Image 1 (cartoon, rainbow, N blue to C red):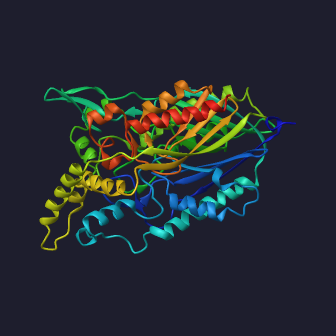
Image 2 (image 1 turned 30 degrees about the vertical axis):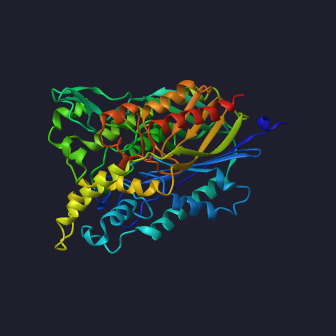
Length: 490
């Protein structure tokens, strides 16, 4: 019996990772502390084993992956019999109403560039969960579910399906400004100057279903190329649209495990700006500014419910197809690539200009008066340029791990970026796999990876402050990912 004929072992586990203490909420330029829990945030682990091959996929309702936590998890699982911790992949759904569960990177960078004595005074509860205790908290939760899924993996089958769910919409509208095209993230599309959107959207819903030996579903991997950020700019904890989505899938398919993945979606959001601009002309500029809480004119809960319906319908249609193609002995391959892309550079002139802008604001506070939160947000771009210039004195490369899988006719590839949709489509179109699943924001946080059009258009998500790599790096990522995927079909 060769490796491909050996049985597949599948294990699942999940946990509620909602703390019973206040947390810093991540995902906006201004600081937020959670006030209440709208719905629980969770983490789910899936183990797939076959002979000497294995993968552990973990998805969490968070904005980005805390590498400190991943390192803690791997260290604590070193004694787990047969588990290769290098095969653990952690990704997030990119809800903007969860914690970083570790050091507050936004605060650390601002303190480094501006100085702690000028940072706004924060009024936070004494009981707030942050820093090392927060990292320990999440690491414990993830270790428990990975260990359980590993130890309870049982023979089963897997099958895939592709369908469509209209969830993602491009969030970078293009406007005619003084005879030139200019992009503005979350721009008001009801304006006469609105022309088009900078890029496309991907409405693919990719699914992998797992089954026990009696043919009953045990879980489903669902990849949607859209971040879960309907509820951003508010102070509650929530899994966003994945909360109603998971409930609705279970209502239709039973109490199965669900592993949500976010596909290439760096320029996407789950709200149609053409539709909502008509009733949000005042709030869209505030949304774009990210200076504070914004009461947009829309029912966020209803938006999430409808998104959940659309995803669920796709998952159920896929289920009807996948139940007829269960494979107990699929070809299973897993590569972990050490990738390196060029760090996006800023010039010394850019650095000096940014430093001058920062010093100009700091001079206004020579009397010891602290900066306001609004002032810190307004300095986001120059702070980012200064921080990048300091980083590029130490390295010219951004290094990360990419997990590449083949499971039967399907391929799966991870990256740590908020990857613009174009790159995902290029990989899917040229992949030799019948189904190619892109997983962004996995095993690191590389910021946005914008396109050439995005750099020309400007706006947030294309500037150095919010990116680590540029379109040349995006091209390299596409080619290296394709080489790794396609080699599994040689």
